[in-house]
Length: 217
Length: 256
Image (cartoon, rainbow over all chains, first blue to last red; front, side):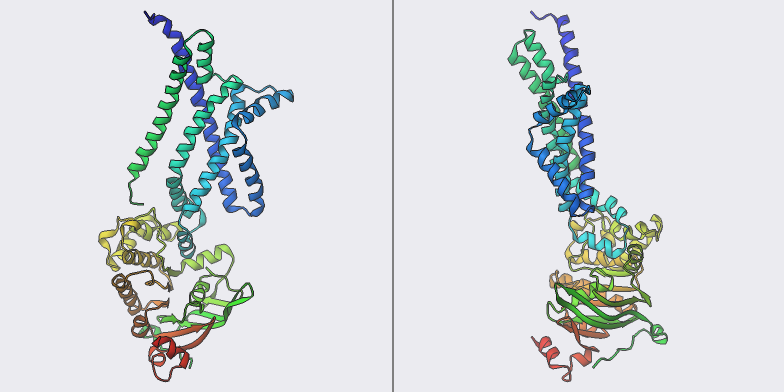
């Protein structure tokens, strides 16, 4: 016999944990997308000198395990005597990590925009910023949408690592229940279902949006 | 045999006006001269066909006119005004030179109408409503009124190229440059595009067209320029170049 009243407190904890996980995903995702966008701009507009540091950064971020970045962001400042909240450290680590992937996605999307249009814009005397806003960015967005959402679902799964520095997200909450005697399989299955549902929603939203744009371009 | 064909337009004939003036235009890439000190004058209202074997520099010559290819040396004037490589000046001057490309180069995320309206609005030459009215007229002129709302991917090659011509005309250019505008098209679609080009020519537009269409060069052009190895080898009326008196090299090219 399950006592309904006794589920109330755990439910609040789970909802809070989902909130923390989404906050971590959203803030680090937005920062990463902004940095990724700026890196793409620097890559396109800048010379070869810019490409070297961007390349090194991108390589580092993509080859280092996210858990190491997470520990670095959390224990690094602590070792230097600065207190950093676990959530702040997690946001920094995931933004640093994801920005490199987003940059690669945006850069590939830029390369996918047919070049002949650039020549037409030059010949017509269209100012570069107008051309970028009205032609290049919409076409990049269309190319990047699928990989961007795909990468974001991976980022969301990776935010579960933040439990290692005690960010109160979904995995952290379910471990808490397990330590206090809940059935481990039930708790892990529950956490898994939450990740799956949220990621499925993101993927479904993306395919809905790209279907609505139609196949004309 | 450099003969300057008279412009056919009576108005232009009263006041012959140099629309494009190229002096000693050279382009050297990796020590190889793609263009070799080319001189070329195009008068207002003239239709000039540039022909010659592939690799002779025809397209490059055309592209130096609006500096899509930067000449290494020489001077180019558009309606008396020197093409200025400084970015903002160049952009303004390019806006006055219509260019039509082999592969149409339409903006893929824009409808036919938006493609034609975009440049006048983006360059601040027209307000949206005004640009739209003009765009619809130009699209009607190339016979595609029913395709205003279609995206490039929904149009045939010939239709795309006609929209590309309308897009260039929307900037009210002083000269239209055609870079092998029909080379990527099946003969039936090429015909539609050539018809539009002939109409433009007849309406008094100044045209420089790099072309493989000898029919167009012969019937529509006032003047044919034959290029080889980065130089102009012959420049004359179609009658001159298609005559027995034409240089041997030209005759060999035309009969090959």
